[in-house]
Image (cartoon, rainbow, N blue to C red):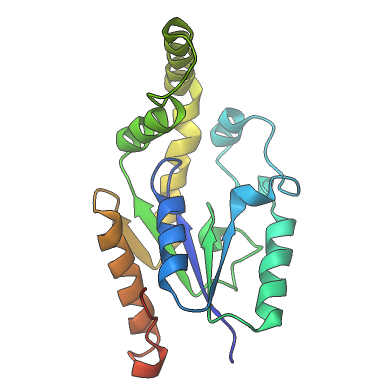
Amino acid sequence: MGAPYVISINSVSGGGKTALSELLHESLRSSALFRFDDFDDSNVYPEDYYEWSMRGSDVSEFDCPGMQEAVVKEIKRGKVEYIVMDYPFGRDHHRFTDMIDLSVFVDTPLDVAMARRILRDYPDSSETPSDIVLKNLHKDLDYYVRKARYPYLSTYSRKGSCDLVLDGWMPLEALRREVLGKVREDQDADEDSVPAAT
Protein backbone atom coordinates (compact mmCIF):
# COMPACT_ATOMS: atom_id res chain seq x y z
CA MET A 1 0.00 0.00 0.00
CA GLY A 2 1.31 3.46 -0.90
CA ALA A 3 1.14 6.59 1.22
CA PRO A 4 -2.41 7.52 2.25
CA TYR A 5 -4.25 10.34 0.49
CA VAL A 6 -4.60 13.19 3.02
CA ILE A 7 -7.69 15.42 3.00
CA SER A 8 -7.88 18.57 5.14
CA ILE A 9 -11.28 20.17 5.87
CA ASN A 10 -11.52 23.79 7.06
CA SER A 11 -14.26 26.36 7.69
CA VAL A 12 -15.18 28.95 10.28
CA SER A 13 -16.36 27.62 13.64
CA GLY A 14 -19.90 26.38 13.02
CA GLY A 15 -19.22 26.15 9.30
CA GLY A 16 -19.57 22.38 9.05
CA LYS A 17 -15.98 21.11 8.96
CA THR A 18 -16.44 18.55 11.73
CA ALA A 19 -19.68 17.15 10.29
CA LEU A 20 -18.15 16.87 6.82
CA SER A 21 -14.93 15.34 8.14
CA GLU A 22 -16.84 12.68 10.05
CA LEU A 23 -19.04 11.89 7.05
CA LEU A 24 -16.01 11.53 4.77
CA HIS A 25 -14.36 9.25 7.31
CA GLU A 26 -17.48 7.07 7.31
CA SER A 27 -17.64 7.14 3.51
CA LEU A 28 -14.04 6.32 2.66
CA ARG A 29 -12.97 2.72 2.88
CA SER A 30 -9.85 2.31 5.03
CA SER A 31 -9.58 5.81 6.48
CA ALA A 32 -8.43 7.50 9.69
CA LEU A 33 -9.84 10.72 11.14
CA PHE A 34 -7.92 13.35 13.10
CA ARG A 35 -9.56 16.38 14.73
CA PHE A 36 -7.53 19.43 15.72
CA ASP A 37 -9.65 19.93 18.86
CA ASP A 38 -8.80 16.41 20.08
CA PHE A 39 -5.19 17.54 20.60
CA ASP A 40 -5.86 20.44 22.99
CA ASP A 41 -3.35 19.02 25.48
CA SER A 42 -0.48 19.57 23.04
CA ASN A 43 -1.87 22.41 20.89
CA VAL A 44 -0.50 25.92 21.36
CA TYR A 45 -2.83 28.91 20.99
CA PRO A 46 -2.38 32.71 21.05
CA GLU A 47 -3.22 34.17 24.45
CA ASP A 48 -5.85 36.51 22.97
CA TYR A 49 -7.57 35.64 19.68
CA TYR A 50 -8.76 39.20 19.11
CA GLU A 51 -5.26 40.63 19.53
CA TRP A 52 -3.97 37.83 17.31
CA SER A 53 -6.37 38.85 14.54
CA MET A 54 -5.40 42.51 14.94
CA ARG A 55 -1.72 41.54 14.52
CA GLY A 56 -2.48 39.94 11.15
CA SER A 57 -3.69 36.42 12.05
CA ASP A 58 -0.29 34.73 11.75
CA VAL A 59 -0.98 30.98 11.87
CA SER A 60 2.53 30.32 13.18
CA GLU A 61 1.28 31.54 16.58
CA PHE A 62 -0.68 28.29 16.71
CA ASP A 63 1.08 24.96 16.88
CA CYS A 64 -0.08 21.36 16.79
CA PRO A 65 2.89 19.02 17.35
CA GLY A 66 0.71 16.30 18.85
CA MET A 67 -1.58 16.17 15.84
CA GLN A 68 1.35 16.13 13.43
CA GLU A 69 2.97 13.30 15.38
CA ALA A 70 -0.25 11.28 15.30
CA VAL A 71 -0.77 11.80 11.56
CA VAL A 72 2.85 10.93 10.74
CA LYS A 73 2.56 7.80 12.89
CA GLU A 74 -0.57 6.76 10.99
CA ILE A 75 1.14 7.35 7.65
CA LYS A 76 4.13 5.23 8.71
CA ARG A 77 1.81 2.50 9.96
CA GLY A 78 0.65 2.06 6.37
CA LYS A 79 -2.73 0.57 7.23
CA VAL A 80 -5.14 3.15 5.75
CA GLU A 81 -5.70 4.53 2.25
CA TYR A 82 -7.07 7.90 3.37
CA ILE A 83 -6.52 10.35 6.20
CA VAL A 84 -9.19 12.97 6.91
CA MET A 85 -8.19 15.99 8.99
CA ASP A 86 -10.66 18.34 10.71
CA TYR A 87 -8.09 21.10 10.71
CA PRO A 88 -8.38 24.93 10.67
CA PHE A 89 -5.26 25.88 8.69
CA GLY A 90 -4.90 23.55 5.71
CA ARG A 91 -1.57 24.01 3.95
CA ASP A 92 -1.04 27.44 5.53
CA HIS A 93 0.59 25.93 8.63
CA HIS A 94 4.11 24.51 8.28
CA ARG A 95 3.21 21.31 10.14
CA PHE A 96 1.15 20.02 7.20
CA THR A 97 2.17 22.12 4.18
CA ASP A 98 3.73 19.20 2.30
CA MET A 99 1.53 16.47 3.71
CA ILE A 100 -1.93 17.44 2.44
CA ASP A 101 -3.13 16.10 -0.91
CA LEU A 102 -6.51 17.86 -0.93
CA SER A 103 -7.23 21.05 1.01
CA VAL A 104 -10.97 21.81 1.27
CA PHE A 105 -12.66 24.98 2.54
CA VAL A 106 -16.37 24.98 3.42
CA ASP A 107 -17.42 28.56 2.67
CA THR A 108 -20.24 29.15 5.15
CA PRO A 109 -21.57 32.69 5.74
CA LEU A 110 -20.54 34.06 9.11
CA ASP A 111 -24.13 34.69 10.23
CA VAL A 112 -25.14 31.10 9.45
CA ALA A 113 -22.13 29.75 11.33
CA MET A 114 -22.99 31.97 14.30
CA ALA A 115 -26.62 30.79 14.27
CA ARG A 116 -25.43 27.18 14.24
CA ARG A 117 -23.16 27.82 17.22
CA ILE A 118 -26.05 29.38 19.15
CA LEU A 119 -28.29 26.41 18.36
CA ARG A 120 -25.49 24.06 19.42
CA ASP A 121 -24.53 25.89 22.60
CA TYR A 122 -28.07 26.76 23.75
CA PRO A 123 -30.16 23.62 23.17
CA ASP A 124 -33.90 23.45 23.92
CA SER A 125 -33.22 20.62 26.34
CA SER A 126 -31.09 22.79 28.65
CA GLU A 127 -32.06 22.55 32.32
CA THR A 128 -30.55 25.98 33.01
CA PRO A 129 -33.16 28.58 34.03
CA SER A 130 -34.23 30.71 31.05
CA ASP A 131 -33.13 34.00 32.61
CA ILE A 132 -29.58 32.67 33.02
CA VAL A 133 -29.58 31.27 29.47
CA LEU A 134 -30.68 34.67 28.14
CA LYS A 135 -28.02 36.46 30.19
CA ASN A 136 -25.29 34.12 28.90
CA LEU A 137 -26.52 34.45 25.32
CA HIS A 138 -26.53 38.25 25.60
CA LYS A 139 -22.98 38.16 26.97
CA ASP A 140 -21.78 35.85 24.17
CA LEU A 141 -23.36 37.97 21.43
CA ASP A 142 -21.95 41.17 22.90
CA TYR A 143 -18.45 39.67 22.92
CA TYR A 144 -18.95 38.36 19.40
CA VAL A 145 -19.84 41.81 18.04
CA ARG A 146 -16.99 43.53 19.87
CA LYS A 147 -14.17 41.04 19.37
CA ALA A 148 -14.87 37.41 18.43
CA ARG A 149 -16.04 38.04 14.86
CA TYR A 150 -12.59 39.29 13.81
CA PRO A 151 -10.71 36.03 14.40
CA TYR A 152 -13.56 34.22 12.63
CA LEU A 153 -13.26 36.58 9.65
CA SER A 154 -9.55 35.78 9.38
CA THR A 155 -10.47 32.16 8.63
CA TYR A 156 -11.79 33.18 5.21
CA SER A 157 -8.27 34.19 4.19
CA ARG A 158 -7.45 30.46 4.04
CA LYS A 159 -9.66 29.96 0.98
CA GLY A 160 -6.97 31.09 -1.42
CA SER A 161 -4.63 28.22 -0.60
CA CYS A 162 -7.33 25.53 -0.85
CA ASP A 163 -7.86 23.17 -3.79
CA LEU A 164 -11.61 23.01 -3.37
CA VAL A 165 -13.98 25.68 -2.00
CA LEU A 166 -17.48 24.41 -1.22
CA ASP A 167 -20.70 26.34 -0.76
CA GLY A 168 -21.56 26.00 2.93
CA TRP A 169 -25.28 26.40 2.12
CA MET A 170 -25.27 23.04 0.35
CA PRO A 171 -26.60 19.93 2.14
CA LEU A 172 -23.95 17.82 3.82
CA GLU A 173 -24.51 14.96 1.39
CA ALA A 174 -23.85 17.29 -1.56
CA LEU A 175 -20.61 18.46 0.05
CA ARG A 176 -19.57 14.84 0.54
CA ARG A 177 -20.20 14.08 -3.14
CA GLU A 178 -18.11 17.07 -4.25
CA VAL A 179 -15.14 16.05 -2.12
CA LEU A 180 -15.29 12.42 -3.21
CA GLY A 181 -15.56 13.56 -6.82
CA LYS A 182 -12.40 15.63 -6.43
CA VAL A 183 -10.62 12.66 -4.83
CA ARG A 184 -11.58 10.48 -7.80
CA GLU A 185 -10.38 13.18 -10.19
CA ASP A 186 -7.05 13.43 -8.37
CA GLN A 187 -6.63 9.68 -8.58
CA ASP A 188 -7.19 9.73 -12.35
CA ALA A 189 -10.61 8.08 -12.04
CA ASP A 190 -8.89 4.69 -11.79
CA GLU A 191 -11.76 2.32 -11.07
CA ASP A 192 -9.65 0.40 -8.57
CA SER A 193 -8.85 3.53 -6.57
CA VAL A 194 -12.31 5.12 -6.45
CA PRO A 195 -13.21 5.53 -2.76
CA ALA A 196 -16.05 3.25 -1.74
CA ALA A 197 -19.01 5.05 -0.21
CA THR A 198 -20.92 3.20 2.47
